[in-house]
Image (tube, rainbow, N blue to C red; front, side):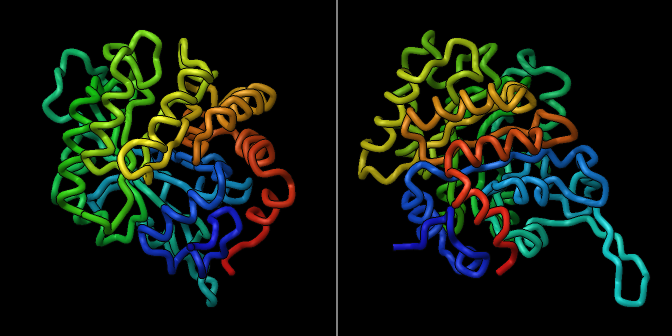
Amino acid sequence: MAHRLISATKTEIDAMSTKELKDSIRASEGRVILSQNYVGVEPLVENTLNFEVASAFGADMVFLNGYSMDSNSNLPGLHTKFVNADGSVTEKNLRVNDVKKMSHMPVGIYLECGVGDDKNTSTSIGASLVRPDRIASKENLELAVKEGVDFIVLGGNPGTGTSLDTIIEATRNAKKIIGDKAMIWAGKWEDGVNEKVLGDPLRKDSKEKIGELIDAGADVICLPMPGSRQGVVVSDIRELVNYTHSYGDGKALAMTFLDASVEGSDTDTVRECTLMSKQTGADIHAIGDAGLHGVSQPEDIYQMTITVKGRRLGWLKMASGNR
């Protein structure tokens, strides 16, 4: 059994296989914190990148939204400077393998699945993320594995108009292409205007679609967190988490996602949402990137950390560094 992720060191995390990483999340018994970072904007703190801030405030995992598989792309959220021993400065655009070297967290990326969906349902902002360098194509999936990504999140950013059936098909294709070389996370927790998210009381096929996602190869089902989405409550999400944990061979995990800009709210609100998330039985509690400058408020990450893990395990993760 893999060492649980919430108390694993960098050396242990770097040595984990895909299966061991999944087992380490399960072994953490619903106490894993994930931070989403949008890398298309400048970082929140000068001379510091957002994944470093997230890690410093207790996140166990990070995934990069807006990440481009074009290695020549300009991603302001991953551009940094290094001071050399002779005093000279080297500028660099970081890639996934660089982020992994600089952090003690598993690193994932968000790939879009919306190609072929009705463009009339997409806003200009959302549609701008559905580009050849950002979609879950065979080429991009293979490049992601080559870069050392630990997990790939398949979904549709707000405004993309991506349907859940498209996400299911993208999950099936991704599993065929990457196999067990990286975890696959999939679901519908945002972009709920034209098609309701999983767990919305107006959506009547949530369980059926979760089963299809797992059959397609999803390791983790992504669900909205109670308190963050319109009409989504604990009882409905708990039922879906229980279904996820019991479907098929019972090995699929569940993540609930605090987003819809609530990640930029006050700590009392984040604490309440996090407590509701724990009640659902989710394995992973994620906090989104729509705070300020591509990351949630650092104190909100910390509040989520302390609420889920307490000070002992929270401070352990914050202080352990790159051991």
